[in-house]
Amino acid sequence: MASIGWVLLLFIAELSALATSGAHGDGNFTLRCQPDQAASLLQLKKSFSFFHYPSALESWQDGTDCCLWEGVGCSNSSGHVTALELSGHGLYSQGINPAIFNLTSLQLLDLSMNYFGEYSLLQFRFERLPLLTHLNLSHLGFQGQIPTGIGGLTNLISLDLSANYDLGDVSTYDIITGDRNNVLYLQDPNFKILVANLNNLRELYLDGVDMSSSGEWCHALAKSLPRLQVLSLSYCKLVGPICPSLSNLHSLTVINLEGNFGIPTALAPFPEFFMDFLNLSVLRLAATNLQGWFPRRTFQSKTLRVLDLSWNQDLSGPLPNFSNTSSLETMMLDGASFSFGKPGSFTNFKYLQTLSLDVNISSVEPQSSLGIHRSLRHLGLTQTDSTSNLGLILSGIGDVQNLQSLELSDWRFSLTSFSSLVKLKSLRRLSITRCTFTRSTLSTFGNLVGLRSLEVSDCDFNGPIPSAIGNLTNLKSLNIDNCDFLGPIPSSIGKLMNLRSLEIF
Ligand SMILES: *[C@@H]1O[C@H](CO)[C@@H](O)[C@H](O)[C@H]1NC(C)=O
Ligand SMILES: *[C@@H]1O[C@H](CO)[C@@H](O)[C@H](O)[C@H]1NC(C)=O
Ligand SMILES: *[C@@H]1O[C@H](CO)[C@@H](O)[C@H](O)[C@H]1NC(C)=O
Ligand SMILES: *[C@@H]1O[C@H](CO)[C@@H](O)[C@H](O)[C@H]1NC(C)=O
Ligand SMILES: *[C@@H]1O[C@H](CO)[C@@H](O)[C@H](O)[C@H]1NC(C)=O
Ligand SMILES: *[C@@H]1O[C@H](CO)[C@@H](O)[C@H](O)[C@H]1NC(C)=O
Ligand SMILES: *[C@@H]1O[C@H](CO)[C@@H](O)[C@H](O)[C@H]1NC(C)=O
Ligand SMILES: *[C@@H]1O[C@H](CO)[C@@H](O)[C@H](O)[C@H]1NC(C)=O
Ligand SMILES: *[C@@H]1O[C@H](CO)[C@@H](O)[C@H](O)[C@H]1NC(C)=O
Image (cartoon, rainbow, N blue to C red; front, side, top):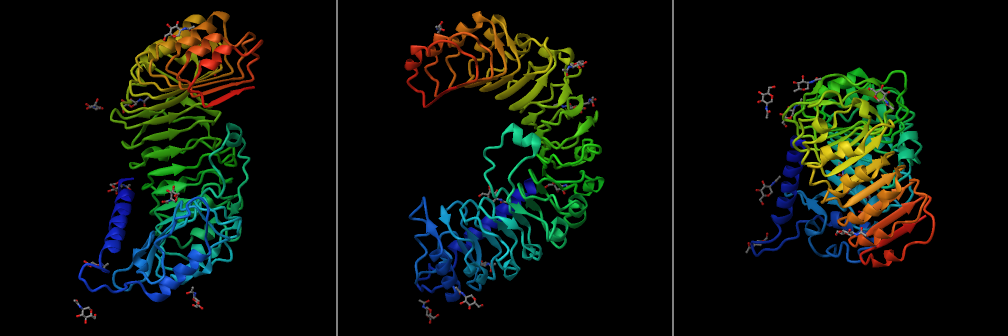
C-alpha cells in the first residue's frame, strides 16, 4: 500500500508542479498550451451537458492557457495535455467525444463518476492514447464488451473499469446468489487476451465486469501481471478456482474477489498462500464459496487491516490468527462457521473497530474472548445455536464503551440480557433481526436514550409497540419491519422531534 501511495503522491506533486510552473511569473505571458490541444478540449466541453454543477469547467475558455484549466495537466516542455482529471464533475455525455482521442500525449485519463450514457466502449479509439499510464472509466454507465484497444495500452500502471452499475445497494441475497446485472463484459477479447500485454499494471479494478467467459482468469493474472499490487474483481461471475500460481503475485496489497459464487464448489479451499503475502492489507473473499477447514496458521502480514470471509457457509475452523503486532481493523466472519477456540485467541487486536461473527456458545468462552476490545466501534453477532446467552457475551463486551453500532440477529432476549445493552452508553445504532423478546424486555427500550438509529425487523413481538419508545428523543431514524406488533401506534412517537425517517411496516 505504501508504495502505491508514493507513486500517487509523486504523480500528484508532479502534476501540481506542472500546473503552477511556466506560463506566468516573468512578466512575459505566453500561452503554453498548444492550439490543437485547446481545440480538442473545447470540442470536448461542447459535448458535455452539466447537470448538477452548472459552473463546472468554467475555466475552460477560448484564448486562455488550457494548461491552467480545471482538471487539465500539461507537459512542461511541449505544451501537450498529459492529464485530464474530470472525476465526479456532474458531466453528462453521449459516449466519449472523439476529440479526447486527439490528445495523444495523455498519460492520465480519469472520467469516473459522471454519466456517459448506456454506450458501448467498442467505438472508442483507445489505441490512439499509447502513453496512458492511468485510465479510470469507473461509474460512467458504459455497457457491452471491453475493447481490445485497452489491452494495447502497454504503459498502463492503473486500470479501473469497475462498477458500471450502482454497487451501493447490494443485498445479502445478491451477494450469496451472485445474481447481478453486470453490464460490461469480457468475451472477445476475454480477460486473458486483455491483460496479455499489460505487464506494467499495478492496480486492476474490474468490479462488476462479467468475466464468465474467461475461465483462465487466474492463470492469466499470474502470468501476465507479475507486478500487480491491487486486484479487485468483485461480482465478476468468475468461473474456475483461485489457482496456486496466484501465489506468484506476492506484492499484492489488496485482494477483493467478493461475490464470485461461480468459483466451483469442489475445489475451493481457502488459498493458504495469501497468508504469506507480507504486504497484504485488504483481503475480501466474502461469498466466494470457500469450503473446508481454515488453516491453523498465522497471517504473516503485519499490515493486514481488513479481513472479510463472511458468507462462506462451508468454511469452518478456528478463528484466523494474527501476530501480536497485528493492525487489523475490520474482521467479518458472519455467515461462516468459525469457532472461538481457546480463550485468549482474541487478544491480539489493538485496533479492531469492526467485527461481525456468528456466535455458537458451545465453542465460546465469552469474557476471555471478547472482553478486551476497547477499540471496537461496530459489532455484529448472529446466534447459531439455541443456547447462546447474549447477556454473558455482552457482559464480556461491557468494557467496550466505544461501541457505536450493534447488529444482532437470531437472539432470544430476556430482561437481563437486554439490560446489558442499555449499559453500552455510546451506542448510536442498533439493528435487531429475527429476535424474540419477553414482554418485560419491551419497557427497557426506553433506556437506550443515546440511539440515533433503531431498526427492528422480522422479530416476533406479538404485542403493542412500547410507548417507552418516545423516550428515545435522539432518534433520527426508526425502522420497524414485519414484527407482528399489535394495536395502535403509540402517540409518544410524536415526541421524537429529531426523527427524519420513520418506516413502520
Ligand atoms: C518576452 O518574450 C519575447 C519573445 O519570446 C522576448 O523577445 C522578450 O525579450 C521577452 N520579454 C521579457 C521581459 O522577458
Ligand atoms: C482530431 O484529429 C483529426 C485528424 O487527426 C482531425 O481531423 C480533427 O479535426 C481533430 N479534432 C480536433 C477537435 O482537434
Ligand atoms: C518543468 O519545468 C520546471 C521549471 O519551470 C523544471 O524545473 C522541470 O524540470 C521541468 N520538468 C520537466 C519534466 O520537464
Ligand atoms: C477511479 O475513480 C473512482 C471514483 O472517482 C475512485 O473511487 C477510484 O479510486 C479510482 N480508481 C483508481 C484506480 O484510482
Ligand atoms: C512490500 O513493501 C515494501 C515497502 O513498500 C517493499 O519494499 C517490498 O518490496 C514489498 N514486498 C513485496 C513482496 O512486494
Ligand atoms: C497464533 O499466533 C500466535 C502469535 O503469532 C502464536 O503464538 C500461536 O501459536 C498461534 N496460534 C495458532 C493456533 O496458530
Ligand atoms: C510479540 O511476540 C513476540 C514473540 O512471539 C515477543 O517477543 C514480543 O514481545 C511480543 N510483543 C508484544 C507487543 O506483545
Ligand atoms: C456449535 O458448536 C458445537 C461445538 O463446536 C457444534 O457441535 C455445533 O454443531 C455447533 N452448532 C451450530 C449450529 O453450528
Ligand atoms: C427514559 O430514560 C430515562 C434515562 O434518561 C430513564 O430514567 C427512564 O426510565 C426512561 N423512561 C422510560 C419510560 O423508559
